[in-house]
Length: 498
Image (cartoon, rainbow, N blue to C red; front, side, top):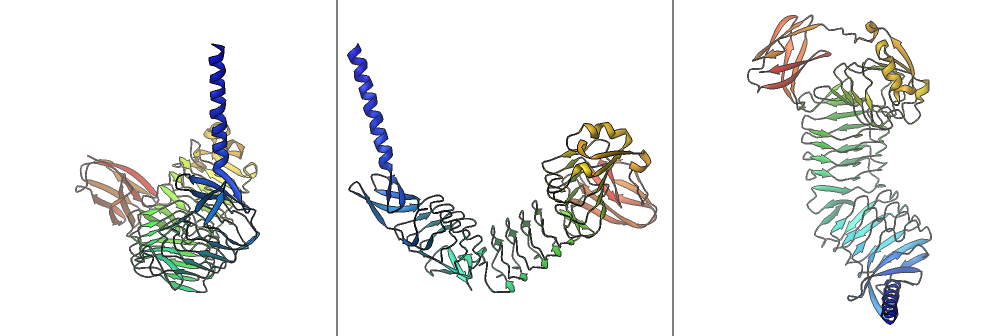
């Protein structure tokens, strides 16, 4: 039995040594570049670390280790990241893939030579190549990752081999082959007005991010979607007139456009993602076509159509006081972010939630009036970024003081009670609506001329009508049974259609 156990131990030890030897054999270094074997049978390797290389480098197409010659097929994830000692790189035709962030922040490189055979350029592969003025894309490239050329501050043009079947360059600007997608506008291209070809339907992620010389964009008439950060940090753009077929504005699409003062949104837009215009410090007006069924603007402020959600308060507005409409139940992500002129804000009794970073960076905020009897729920970092809540006065209904003092975040404010007459919303307009349960007709008695709008539970406008002083009727007989919201002036009413 002892001999059998000893033999088993020797067998296990031998297998372990073989595995260790195999692991060592999978990685090796040749000429300051580390490699990992991809396929021992095919004899292919990936570069995993080139951070010790210097000067002008030519990546070899083959390397030999232990008497075996391997073909270099890939440059791996962050392989040369932050190497400030290389000045030019030639990539051989044997390499078919450049991994994510492979040459990120190689800021001293003045030229990359990409040879035919390369298929994939990964996410952020050449980001922050600050001295590169042009990129030549070979015919073989079929996939260019997001932000591959981000922060290439001196980049003036792309050149694409005419034989490439996926991409094309026109006037130095990178598109997909049929020019339905704007992929990347060179950051340093010396052009004040860019007229987007009418073939373009999508402005891709980061398409014109950081283009500091562009002052005006004439959008494609057929543009359907603006993706994330597509025009972020376009520092000289002052006004944006979005085209009539646009349906989607991605998150941060026009963020940090420091001179932007006006955005005009057409009726066609169905989706505006979070923070589309945030940190644009001079923005004062977001104007929505009245025919838009999803959104509306009031005094340049962006709401959903039923005005229950405040989406964006332009951070360049100069008023020091703002009263949120009594219809609003939620304030969305980054809605007031970095609105430096805002000192006082009045929140309605209807408010139930304030979302992430809604008042982040509103560093001059001095007083909040919150009329809600129940403290609105707060998401993360609602009042961060220089807002010292312990110095901000929070006025709440006297009956709700205990609730606010017990609520997370709210309890850190300088809480003061106010009498109920103060805390009740002051309505200038007077309306009477009846019946709120109806089979067809709702009557509105108004003390002045105005407008009434009816929305379904999806926030879609189903009817709008002008109001005269006195009694008015609204016919809902053609609408399906269900719940509706009637907005008249600055009041909302729940209507149930039976």
